[in-house]
Length: 142
Picture 1: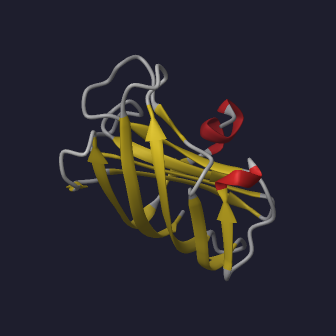
Picture 2: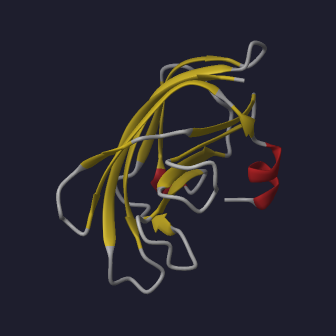
Picture 3: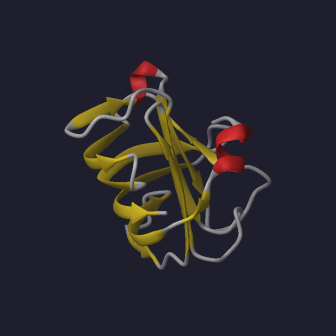
């Protein structure tokens, strides 16, 4: 994920639900308080965290391609992906594995800065020893 997109993102209003099963210990719903969105016709970045802090427990997703309603973006294409921020910060987020990850855009309005959809992926720690299954949905605007 490019730092440029993260830096362009602004606080968003609306709903983002994130569910994570870290190390197969059972899925939990994250109580998201920080919602961030960057959207234009050529890309999307969304993040949600439990605190107003980019390294607090949460997740992000991105698409580096034309954003079209009714489209599912597979992580295999490398144009889309995600990251998971574990409960205990370990100096790095966990990167989504390309196999099986996806983001679905149900509705999008670039002019009015609104987007609705869902996502799912498995993220892996940098050393490859830990994983988390992450899924969620969103309905956000700037």
